[in-house]
Length: 168
Image 1 (tube, rainbow, N blue to C red):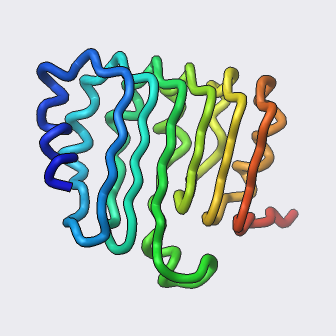
Image 2 (image 1 turned 180 degrees about the horizontal axis):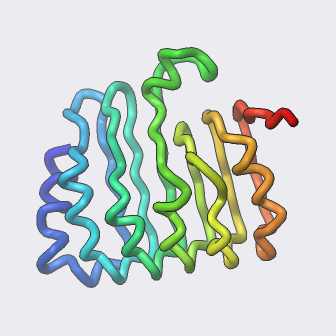
């Protein structure tokens, strides 16, 4: 996590042309601070971004970087949490990301959310999304109803997903 914070801190300077970034947060390390992740906003050339947090290294993902990454084609958010999906303990450790925040990622082709709850609907701006993988999460029914609106979606994987059902 200390290395991750250092990379985040340098992002506004010499790493501004970075096209791929992976952050691994170990369970024994302190959480990656949201303020460190906000610094990633300047990585406007970023095409591939992955975060993997394990154990109790829960991180809060801010909206700012996601709204500025117009060239991002691959986004992988992993929150590997101890516990059983569907239990309160597991859900408290689940990372949440707002669908509106991802709307700026208009070039997105591949989205993998593992232990990440996408709040709200799938953004209509994901017209180029080809691959969607959701694991170990609870998704709103509104999210699922938007998927047929994505014309390029060719691959969908949903594993260990608790899908809320809308009632009329």
